[in-house]
Length: 118
Image (tube, rainbow, N blue to C red; front, side):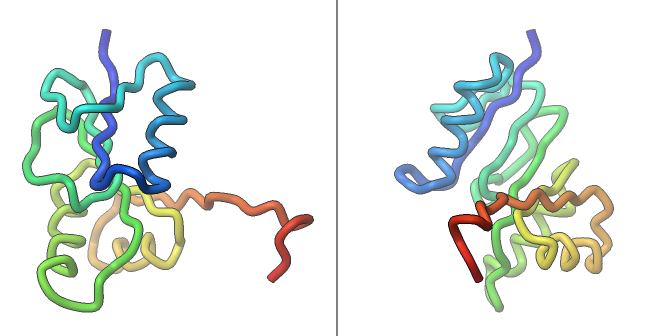
């Protein structure tokens, strides 16, 4: 059976919790030991942990853009190399589109506006 493998850049952060929650709810999603070349899809949370293509389909999560340096370059280089880009903010999705990246989606994390007021 084809499956998605989630690769996280750091342990102990909220994105690891997100990966754990996704994999616990979807039987076709695995998370745990880094890159899995047998997976049909690699989902890199965040893009910074991707180094080379290992699966037929690759997805990157683009959390923020550093103002300069290697991380700035890797943001756009990785976006060009993966098949699909996901961000939590339209700001970064827009930056990717302006850079010529077509397959970009912004997924807002959502906020309980009854509990949290701006």
